[in-house]
Image 1: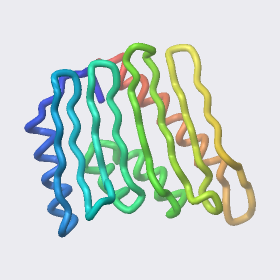
Image 2: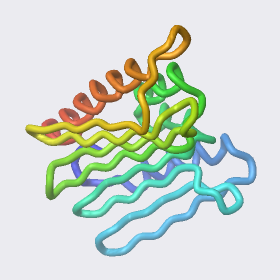
Image 3: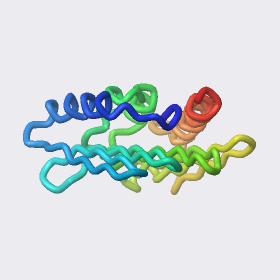
Image 4: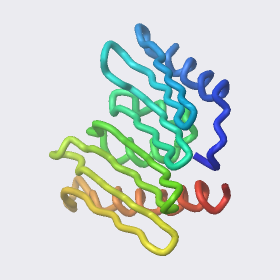
Length: 162
């Protein structure tokens, strides 16, 4: 997500490694002059995909293959999500270059894990969730706080260091 240059061979090697972890999966690629797309699919389900254009870099990871976040360089996100919940349906992280904005969207199951949307830009952040629950056995607030801090860190890494 740092910068916009994309070493397609390196990305393809990472996706091949991920594919070897999922028997029966296949790689799908599409490249145009302005956009590169690579995905790992099992049957018709997309487990992981990466889209890169001059304006947006977006990574999607299915909850069924959340551990792939570690191979994709996002081990800290994987750690936060798995410590707090096992009920993640998907995660999407986007870097919108024209607006210098980072988006992180977590789709929870709606019962144990909320849907979470984070937007971080240079001077603003906004974090919302479908619910926040604090009880003796659960603290969604901690999850939200950790995601906010990680989102700010990613913003610094993806935009200021690029």
